[in-house]
Image 1 (cartoon, rainbow, N blue to C red):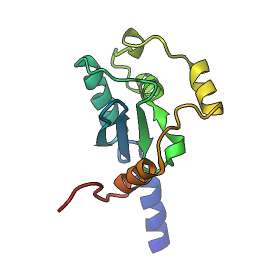
Image 2 (image 1 turned 180 degrees about the vertical axis):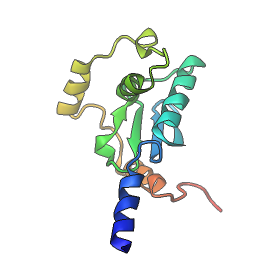
Image 3 (image 1 turned 90 degrees about the vertical axis):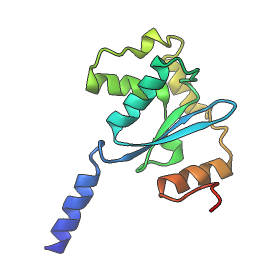
Image 4 (image 1 turned 45 degrees about the vertical axis):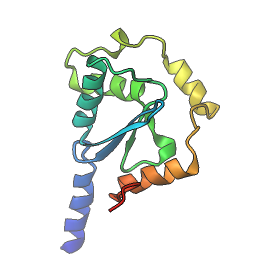
Length: 137
């Protein structure tokens, strides 16, 4: 019986609205935000765009707790995906029209946009594991 309960818990945790999302805006001073649920991550990014934040939609990314850093998605691709789910009238193309699927594929195949050093990679994984990084107590 406990095995069945464990299996149900594992399936339940796969709900995108219960996963933890790490949103990173890459800039001179990287800005990070941890959001619970795909919709909250989408709304956070969307509000930042609507508020006029200077966000690089190519370089910024979203990382889900169940993925590795190499599986991160550019903000642009994450927003495009969410637009198909939430259909709230927000159109990322109105704010950014220089990015295409071809560019994304090229970046992935040629390892472009992989300038994160090992410390940054370890810090991001630690954050997703619930650890405090870079904060002195």
